[in-house]
Image 1 (cartoon, rainbow, N blue to C red):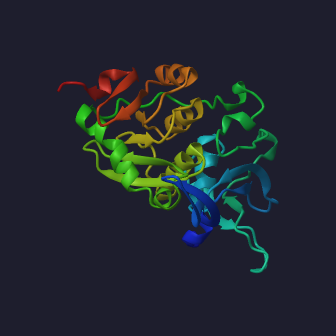
Image 2: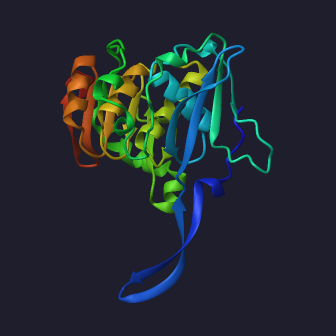
Image 3: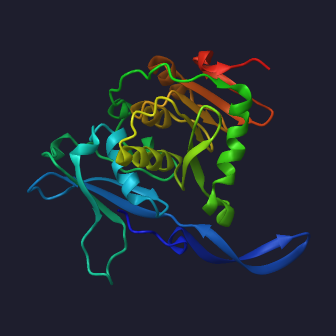
Length: 280
């Protein structure tokens, strides 16, 4: 069980000079926290190896660690995880920024790539595009979702963004049922981290693959979002902004439906429209 992270660790206080209606006001403000988190992994009797450092918003760190390892192809099943814990340090030194995933099998550190993921884009910190093309099977046929349900997803996700309400500075990812019911949502300064947290949540519950769920993300759809969703078996990915060309190419090859510019007024379907009921 992951220790609860107080909201104060996810949100930082600041003082700003704000201009409002022509008036200068000195007031308090709230910022989304951004801190590095190191992910380590090791098997029985092994010293944990450093796998990645990602810039993230504290909270749901165990989900982020296991979700990252799974979507990068370094974990395959829930029973491979023996434990997940913060680095063992005295309480006065514990910053909760190192998470160790202990496996029930040997972990091969020689297979590791050089991961350093920024909050803005996980792909940028890897050596080359070829290195992030994790082998994954095409997604299952999945559900058919009505266009009215798709149009309502951004509002439902926005209403679930607790920390965004405080700061206005976080991305979010949400899993939805076919009827538009929100199953679970996660927030982070990095949209790819928010997806990893969701996948980690499902992984730790033994709920993968997510073949009957839709994913809604704030911002754009990058190649890495498509890759992570495909690893989790998610057939439909929606975003409030546009997908990249490589995201569309990958989704098309993997049999995934990608929708962009999803708003109350409509959306674009870029790949595999057969999963969307486009009738009025």
